[in-house]
Length: 78
Image (cartoon, rainbow, N blue to C red):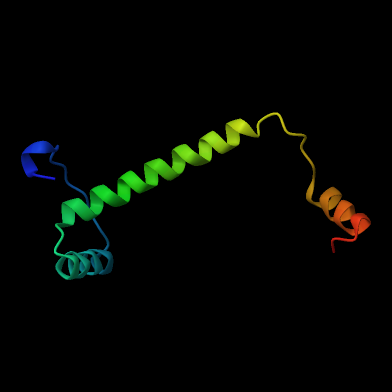
């Protein structure tokens, strides 16, 4: 991504995280901005997929952990 294509912002990273990010950027010939953009994009996509899965299961019957263990024992699964 070119600088002109994005919005400039300031973020503060833990020293060791920043160092690791710089090393990864060097090893992959990728800018820090691109690495951060990819990570944020992946996080947003993952959250969206999680929310979609929760919505799809919203009407499922709730069962407690103890009830599930009893069911698994009764079925011979554990």
